[in-house]
Length: 47
Image (cartoon, rainbow, N blue to C red; front, side, top):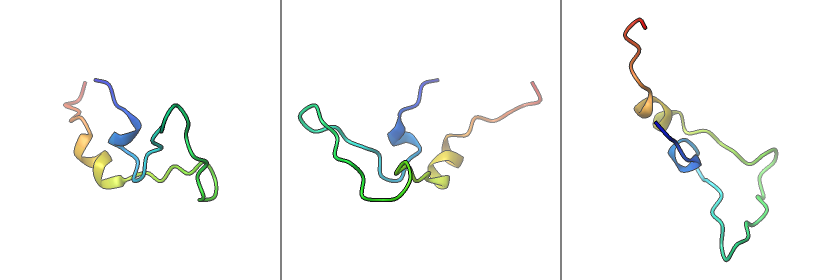
């Protein structure tokens, strides 16, 4: 299964005309969305 950043980030970086704007938030500007992650979590049946 493949994932993209929009699958688990609250505000993913979006390229515009081949460029991305520098984020205004501190750090790497990646804020995980726990609700999205939980919805996408694959069940583990003891394997």
